[in-house]
Image (cartoon, rainbow, N blue to C red; front, side, top):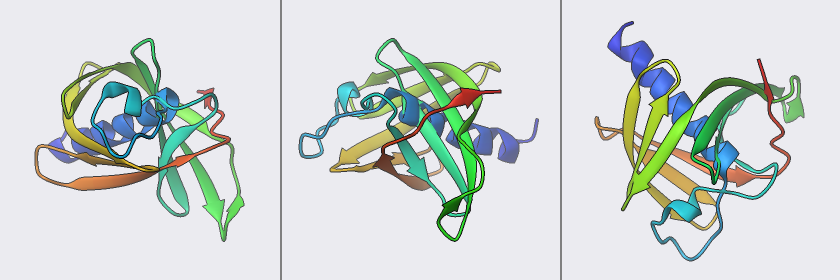
Length: 136
């Protein structure tokens, strides 16, 4: 698998993990509880093709995708990747079900999660409700 594909899978994995786990808000502190959100909430990014990450309290994570057009939902959230996650300080480690490990620096500020990879590429996700994921 090429490095670019692994990088995309890694970011997608993180996104999905964030969506499933969820988190609360306490002014931007960097604790793992900030990644875990409430029931049916997730971290979402994208326009027409949206990605969601859910981090669960039990250490599981899920990534999902859906399509929207002009704000209208075309497809429901469909889970594509599972794995495990853990955090240490401001880093979150994703252990992809396919055997890949990804480490990101994260920051939660208000309703925004920012993940930064080893190449210093950052992705911002917004906390959203109604992220109900059906696994493929």
